[in-house]
Length: 148
Image (cartoon, rainbow, N blue to C red):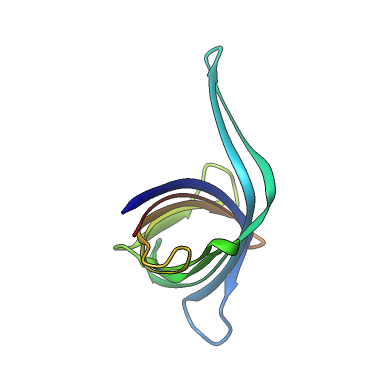
């Protein structure tokens, strides 16, 4: 087994699934990137820099389970590396953020299957996200996969 750990920032949109009460669909994408965090002069500086031409695409369905809670399942394609399927561990949470009109939430996903170079992948993805009033999503993932 080998361990693969990485972070990505996805951007895209989420909105109601027509004809399905309490269900939403999300589609976001991330280019190859480098996350940089620097502690300097009493400040924390963070940046995301685009690097290379690979693209990851997330497609999921969300089911509201209560006030501020949900479950989600879907797939993430990591360019030529392959794709994984995932489902929520427990429930995700969401609610108003400190910025008016912006919702904030988090969820943990269990990777249930991998394909391509990610065949046999198991692990977890943490998602920390915001959703604007227009449905625009910014979703930061921290991923830890175990591969055969």
